[in-house]
Image (cartoon, rainbow, N blue to C red):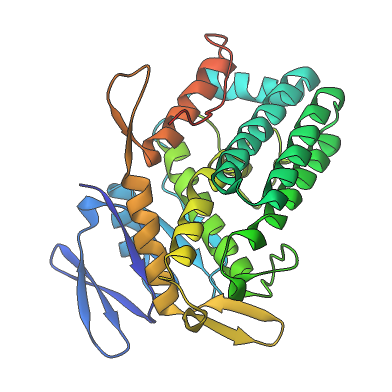
Length: 329
């Protein structure tokens, strides 16, 4: 069974015969079952050579790099094996034609907002949360009257700010925050959101890679030479569906505490123990299955991401209009 491997310590990769090992600074050795892996996540400083990268390429394994603070830095991405010129041409056409791009951009926002409201409805017993739900719904209606990408992004930003403002009413008092701050996160809750969103982004990127869509051609976010911006688009759907429920569970069950963070001047980040706790819950969430209404079989949360890519492909080539995921369970 494929799995992800997380490296938190500094160390080096070493090959012996046909096996690779990660050896940390204390000379502890862990074998890497490359043939069983999909991703390696590196949070420490790790030395390796081209021999290791060649092995990753042969086994179709991605390696994601995070800096000291846990922020996503980049990915070693083996050459795509699923390239389809026909799909890429049609995907690009949907970016270049204004109406087609506007439609897709709005669908990502609609789905993300749907999942935000889905989360908040679990806490409607708080009058303030119910008021915020009403305000979010009013902003969703505004999407119908805006047509430029910056305006769509503006509405999305307002919806997300309202959504985050509700967190203080149902999360423990010690994790209250005033506003969303990203780089750097200035409090524990912001640190959790940033860390979870980084994991979501790399998970989406992994699933995109398994399909024929081009990860650099996006619709809500502007395409960039420095990032796989389609992954940012698709992550808008899955951050409130996957990341936020993990955060709510960890905090409300008191599994993550203020002692699981490092506090520096104007910055807060999860320490190693905190990251391990988050990743354990995250992995369990991705593996959770739901009975799919159309496929008539159980599908994991992780596989729902790939299904979203398949729906986009059908939309690009004119087979079926794209309707984003809106969790029915």
